[in-house]
Image (tube, rainbow, N blue to C red; front, side, top):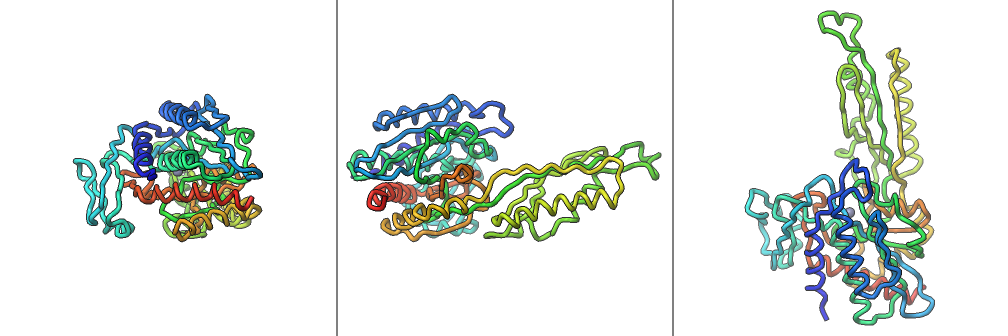
Length: 410
Ligand SMILES: [Zn+2]
């Protein structure tokens, strides 16, 4: 029995919830729509007959599908409820394009369109069913496709009574703003290893991510009437421009790829009196990551020394996440099983480093290996977001296959 229509129906119904998370939100989840979606999913998990279904007031939803064979391992599956704060997720009107003929795709009634000239991956999808938004919002395939895929896989395992391992499910809020795991309890998610279903194109399997930190540099100046400024004014803006020159100009996000790290000046705010420079520091290798942080400390110390400023430049570095690879390496079955499941579904695995962080990185710090598997989507966080129904079906097949194969190789 095909699950295609059920999968599409689930996904479309989830996109109707506005679950955009909010930067600097005070409560958690940061928006009420996330809780509404979580309640809907809680109901669905109960209807599917899962056990230990638990929704916390912070919008963390967990549940268990017990194994139907003895001595089976426990595998976790995660997806996030929220959509990116970078693009509106309100009144999403998803459009289903069957049998894509190639060429430009007009979105809604406005001027927005998606073209294979910019997105060459579209050429691979002729004849497939594409799902897009109407050009005014994102679609929310990141990560509602992951949720729909997990839900559908659970229902396939139940309905077809396939032999499977224990499966723990977690749907979490506020992933896009890095707060998703703040109220996550590892006690509700005891697994041998887990997967986030939050990647892009079919085949993606990711288990290495950046080490990340943010840095804030504060530079102080002294303002006065420009007519009396001679020898007295200190312009924090000019100092900030000069400070920025200390950084290697080719180690930025726009000039690096694959496993190359960078410094990213993400915000520059202030006036003559005071300037704040906000940086993101990223590197895959732990040692190089530490070197980058040390570089910043040295740059600030040297600047203070050469400028001889009365009010010194300040530096504040905060670690964000670590590369999950160390943890995943200790559980090689997590990669092997996903690889095998993909191949048995006729998909060639694409091992890729994540140039960012995931909830899996947080779990890895707690000792749980958690690689990331594809959803089938593209252009996340934008009005051009799209997903193929065939890609989503592949994700369901892979999840089902993982649950089945895990029983053979406990
Ligand atoms: Zn995501």
